Amino acid sequence: DAGVIQSPRHEVTEMGQEVTLRCKPISGHDYLFWYRQTMMRGLELLIYFNNNVPIDDSGMPEDRFSAKMPNASFSTLKIQPSEPRDSAVYFCASSLGPHSYTFGSGTRLTVV
Amino acid sequence: AQTVTQSQPEMSVQEAETVTLSCTYDTSESDYYLFWYKQPPSRQMILVIRQEAYKQQNATENRFSVNFQKAAKSFSLKISDSQLGDAAMYFCAYRILPYSGAGSYQLTFGKGTKLSVIP
Image (cartoon, rainbow over all chains, first blue to last red; front, side, top):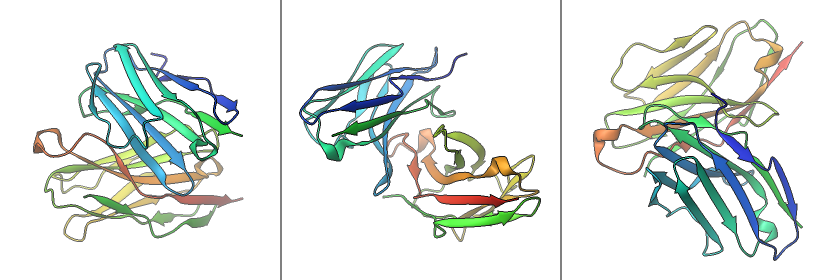
């Protein structure tokens, strides 16, 4: 298995632009999580899905952030409009039930 | 709410020596998982070791072992025979068990400990 695949690996964008981060979970996994990592706040859960349905989005910082999972093999995290304070590493992780957890390699987002 | 505290922002160890990283947590649950993750400069999050709270026996994975003290809510990681490849950020994390009926399946992370290995 190729593991959890995230794209792009790096993204540099200008303030005000729309940014879309992508994630392909491990085949057969039924949970998908989006985390954000910053120096100040560490690793924070943004949202998670179970069987493609959003279960808990209480960690999404603002309405500028949205996430979708149209099918079991794909999820997106969108920021519109982006701001410099959104600069961080964004991780996607998937699991089969609650018993395993595999992270992607992350997307480093820089908003200038 | 559950919290995880790693009190050592940075640690260093001589190659081939042993080092222990500390972690404490706060929870009202009786059943849960605890984890140590390694994040090298490549930023990949790598699972090092996992402990189920209902198991009294400390988990071990090759050179990595934990000292789990449930009453004290302490979960330290010992790395034996340290190697240059062990240099990384290490994160302690907590997760409830699925049938607890409370909260989500998210991982709650500590702020991390940066481990340097001196040749």
